[in-house]
Length: 377
Length: 244
Image (cartoon, rainbow over all chains, first blue to last red; front, side, top):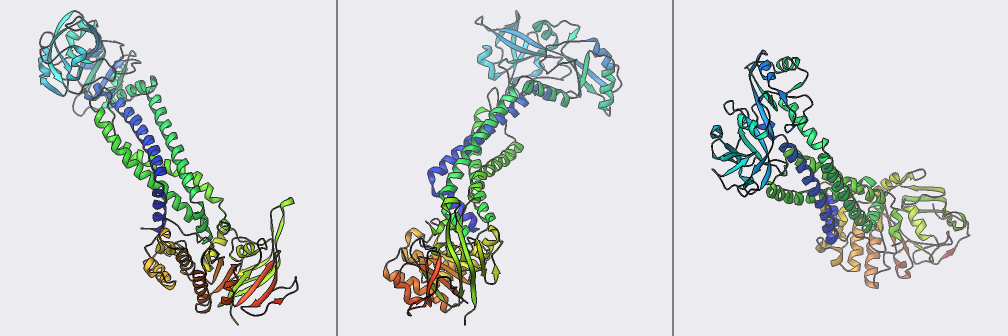
């Protein structure tokens, strides 16, 4: 092991209390940034979950629609026009909207109705764990997620309730289709979705377009866009970006998450900088001795940087373990924290940068060191 | 005649400024030769440490010239001076200044490490240096596990491991009892006489005088006396330079 590294590690572990304080600072900072960024990613995924699970090559949405849940409507005649465009294999209307769910107890709770033509299988409930998605074609059949049992006052398949005064029965149960809002998604047949949301028969929320094999997406998109200025034609990626942009930045939620992450970073940097500085100050005599022995400033900087990197690696590993537990704990929650390999890599880099930046004050201190002090102490 | 390792000519050093301005060294000229142990003696505040710092390239003179192994130090920046130190000078400090978190061998090896000597022989050389000072059995001991005399021996091993031309020792026996002090001086004298190094010891301790080849006295920043080790002191005129 390089002697600089030995010196750095022993300096680091010599004062255990300070080492613990440093670790608390780094772990607090990294976990906070990890949670905030994990929430950001989780939120980003949650807001596009319907778009992600739809079998769509293109989306026709009302002009200016900000997200999947946007209440704007478009004229259903756009569907017929779309079908006439070369390269379009199918154009399927989608009806979505808020409705009231009346529990057996008489209590009301808001739900978000997702209605698609079940024969087209463009947007069906996924992760069906009980019952069948096909059974939604039956009168009054709905699909709900089992995480909302309490909220919807249901206990399983065949539970009953009312939506907008219409009797409904749970015909399929899903697992993990959760809304980032507190409003449960309820899947129904397209026709009944109109009844539950009050959207008239000549209107739709969105139209899902499927292309013929070998059709050029961009050419079809331009062809669809040409026939009306009241609509926008988006690729799934564009629609996802737009939804994310609205929910994360249009609402300020993303900025709040970033602000939290930044705060964590600042707190971590300050704590590590303080402990590293005080450690360096305590070892000034040793650094002066090194200097008297003829070591270059670079040599001393490397000892401090090694110390900072050790802090970073140990702190990151501890934070990683805590982060994994947090991810596990929130996996089934309304807003799961999502940690991706890219985020882990980014956080490691950020931790290293934070610790190395924290070393600047310590380095600035030893730069001014006078080796002659070893003769007076 | 021995080879000259350090040579100073008309060195003056002024410290502080304004009312606090002090002329710590005045017109000091001297030489240190390979194979000689020189004692520098003088009362507190006489300029001993300032001279040691200048000879050890930790300070540059305000005026005058210093040559270490033929290299003039004038105009050198702090990194240049550090390079000269690590190439030519070994220090022994009064308070040892060992690294408490490193073993004896690691403390000694550090002197090689700062020079960039990190090959497999570095550890062996450090252990050999500890063997030279009689501490072969203590290579894995930490400073806290060593007596004062042993710690100073480790410091000497650290000073000699990189084979410097010059060893500067600042009160190396001040914190030691008589027996340990004698042992340390014997080691320093051996390094001068058998290994051909120039050794200068700054001291107040008259017990070390028998080990010296030369004794130089300093007072008020001027070299005042020089005598051979154990010989009758010779009074020198105030402005007279010692040396070559």
